[in-house]
Length: 369
Ligand code: OSB
Ligand code: MG
Image (tube, rainbow, N blue to C red; front, side, top):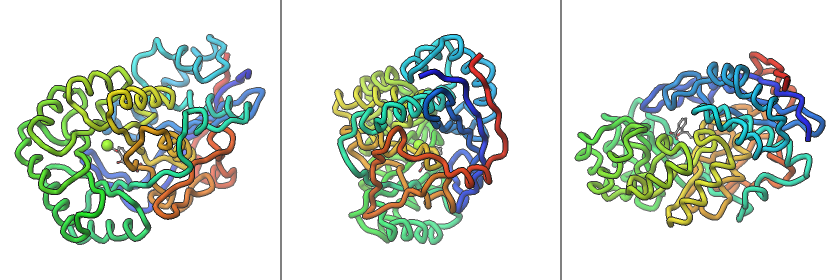
C-alpha cells in the first residue's frame, strides 16, 4: 500500500442535548477526521480531541497543528505502508496520542479494506454483538436526571453511568437507585473532580452497590487512587490516568485501579488499546470501552474493540441517537440493548458524502512529501 497523503477535515456536529460533565458543557462537537489517501481504498480516522483542553491536554486546533507540522511529515519520511509502521514512525514525538491514534486508525482502515479484513477480526473479536451503556451528564435537577435515565432505560441501555462532581454525587445516585431499583447496572464518573480530602464523601457511595467509581482524582495521582481504593469498597476505575499499556500495568500493580476504561484515542490508537486489554486480562482486571462522543466512524471501531474477550463490562458504546440527530455514517441502531459488531472490510462503514459535506467546516489535503 502506497500512501499519497491525508485529507484533514473538521466537522461541526450539534448534540441532541447539552452534555455536562465536571469539566464543562458541550452543545456541539468540533471533530477532526482524517482520510488516508493512496493507491488503495481510502481509510478513515477520527481524532477524539475536544475543542478545549479540559478532558486532556489535547485539543482540536493543536491536533491539526501537530499533524501538519510534525506527524504527517514524519510518516512521509518513513515511507510507511502499514498501521504498525505508523506507531513506530511517530514514537519519537511525545504525547499527542489522540492525533497519533487518528492517523493510525486511518491507515489501519485503508490497510484492512485493501486486504478485505474487518477491524473486529484483526483485533481479536470474540462476539457478534456488544451490550450498550450510556453516559448521562450532570442535570439541573434530580427530576430532570430521572427523566433522562428513564428514557435511556426505556430504549434498552443495559448500564447507566452518571457524571458526578462535588455537590452532585450521593443525591443523584441515591435518587436513581430509589427510583429504578437495585437491578440496574450503575456506575459514576468524576472526571478528576475530587481530591483525597473528599474520601469520606466518596465512601458514602459505597451504600449504592455501584460497579465502579471512574477517575475521581487528578490524572497524575496514581498513588492517590491506590490510597482511595483502600478506603472505599466501590472499585476504582481509571480513565484519564491510563495513557499506555505501561501505565496500565503500573496502576494495576500499585492497586490504583481494579477496572480499566479503555479509550483508543487517549492511549494512541487501537493497537495500544488492544495491548492494554491484554495486560489487564493477564492481571484478571476487567476492562470496558470508553467513548468520546464519536461519530459513526469512531463508534464502529469502538464496537469492534468492545467485542474482545476481556471487555466484560458494558462500555460507553451507545447508539448514534445518543448524541446525534443525524450521524455522518449510516446510524448505529441498538436492538435489545446491543449493537452489532461491524464485519465488513476495515471499519465496515464510511461517511455518507452528502451528510459529510453538510457538516464540514474546513478541509486541507496534506501530501506525504
Ligand atoms: O470521561 O468518559 C469520559 C465524554 C467526553 C469526554 C470524557 C468522557 C465522556 C463520556 C461520554 O463519558 C462517553 C460517550 O461517548 O458515550
Ligand atoms: Mg471518564
